[in-house]
Image 1 (cartoon, rainbow, N blue to C red):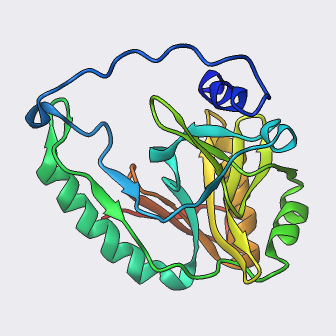
Image 2 (cartoon, rainbow, N blue to C red; image 1 turned 180 degrees about the vertical axis):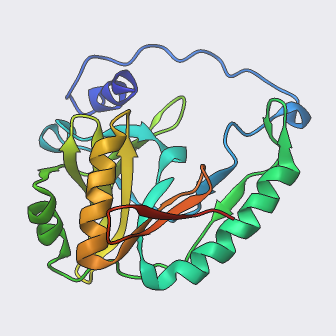
Length: 220
């Protein structure tokens, strides 16, 4: 992934020259299958990363945007409705080699936290602030997310999203094997802000915690 971004940065003098691009291949559209059943259909704006904003920024495929994300518990009924709808959709379009259709999620954008929320999150979770995420496709970079942010919880867990003058507009998680750090973050944010954690591809919600530390989980 870094090689893809580096090729784009070469055009502004920040990396090695890009390699020649192979001619595009042709395929029968009827044979195309989606590699995942759902994506966040969010209108994201991009900017070209600079030398300063490139270093340390997490880089990942656009399809992974907001697949695991936090919501206020006040939206639980809405999330339950969407997950129930999505579960039926996913089962209907599942094949041996992928999905014939993709469930595009577009939920109303409601602030997760107020204008001081990003600083509060970083302090509460002892997180390190990093540049905004950089999104890619399989063949090219899309750019750095405008108004994006990243908080590093560990070497393999990042919180990220969008933040503007109204506050934190979305809060998602990128995890690469360190589920324990994300679980700790959920417990902290659930206690402080009553956040729930939604895993769209796993079709489940971590709703709340009990008095003895157990996690209440909901599945459609």
